[in-house]
Image (cartoon, rainbow, N blue to C red; front, top):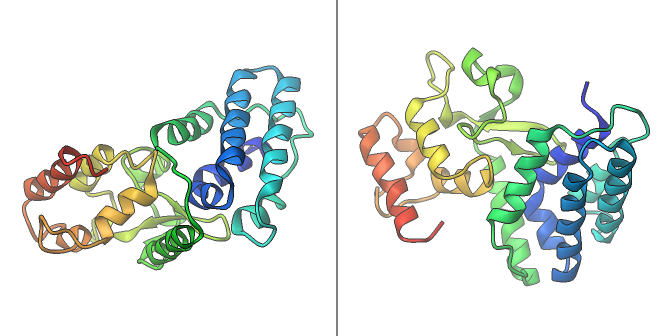
Length: 228
């Protein structure tokens, strides 16, 4: 059974760009500190409840009409014994917070970030109920890009899957791991679905059309340029 704490972690992980764009630098630092306090609470249920309240309190600074704020109001409070967070979910969020240099965004940049997110969500995708056997065994793993829409529903871009078998394409899994798709699924999706000068095309549209090694080299080229 998923606890309210885990629902909160999923919301935070799936909406990290909007949360960052909506908070001031000081507020975002306090938010990161509150998440770290949740990890430090360990298996002390009382400490976890205090830490979760701390996270929610910091997030009161979010605009009330923003998606994260609206979804946060729907997340159950940790009032039952089933409050301890799932370790993998929590560590995934911690990695995301610590692996990305989150600069302060100007309003125009924040609006651009939201526009990019909407564009990525508009790409053909499937829900968790349509994952093949292999993907279903590890739906949140580093090998698949998992985006979360405005309703909190997980969406897996279709290009990741073989159209005949429905299973994940191995080359996509390899590149997703290179791009740290578990830590920054939006950035990984942007690489796949955006134009790529190295390939003279869109990587997602070229899967199966060009050699797998060429796609992999393009991903390595991005990493070597330090643009990731």
